Structures are given as structure tokens and as C-alpha cells.
Length: 166
Image (cartoon, rainbow, N blue to C red):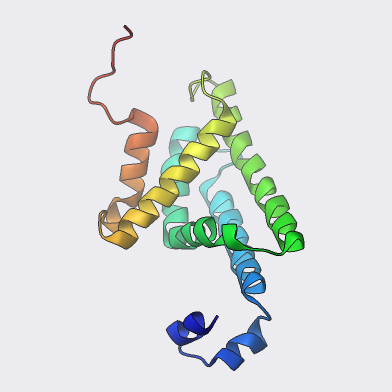
């Protein structure tokens, strides 16, 4: 908490007046992330528009807050308060189900391959968002390449031509 107070330019006492503990701070950041996620889902047309149109818009909507999701992915695991962990898990489950529904809809209408589970596709997309955010943070990826890099790996894979089954 002291390091955080220093990094944002306030005293530790001021920070403690805002949030009582590190876990409370993580929960407040989590609430902000949920709000950002809901807004990105709403603005991208996740529930109604064609999959091929939604994916680029979704990534464009997530990009400004991608470091927030990365922070939660890394720091959220250190939360020790069982009640907060349970609330965070329940909140994220709602968002995860909404994204799973997006992939299931794409599978049902033939836009997305059906041989991979929608749940796995949620994990893959989440992993790519976190990886791209970390790469931007580390200077390995330009922020402008966030969407195109994720879309390329998510939709076309990493090989120029597919491997033939042996």
C-alpha cells in the first residue's frame, strides 16, 4: 500500500482513507474492470451483431483498459479475503457467461468452428488480451498493434500454412 501511495502521489494515510486494505483496493479495481468489460461488450454489439464485426470492435473497446485486466489477472490472485474472492468470482462469471454466449452463437450459426469449446475460446481470447497487454507494457508490442495482433492469432493462428496431419 505504501508503494502504491507513492506511485500515485498521495500519502499512505490518504490512501487508507480511500480504501481500508490492499484487498479492498483490489476489489475497487475489480469493480472498475467489470464496468469497463460491460461497456466494451455493450459497445461492441457482443449479443447481437455478426461475429466477424464484433471481434475487432470488442478488441478496440478492450484496448484502453487492457492493462487493468492484466493487473487484475496478476494481482487478483494475491487477494486473501475469501468474501472478496467469492464476489470477484461471481462478477467475472457473469461476464464470462456473456462472452461464452457470444462464442456459442457464432458456433451455432457457423461463423466459428465448433470443434473447440466456447469456454476454451473465452480462455484463449482472455489469454491473448493479457499477453498483448503485457507485451505492450514490456515494449514488445506497439499499442497500435493490439487488435490486429490478437485478431491474427485468434482467427488465423501462427502458421502461414496449416500443418498436415501425420
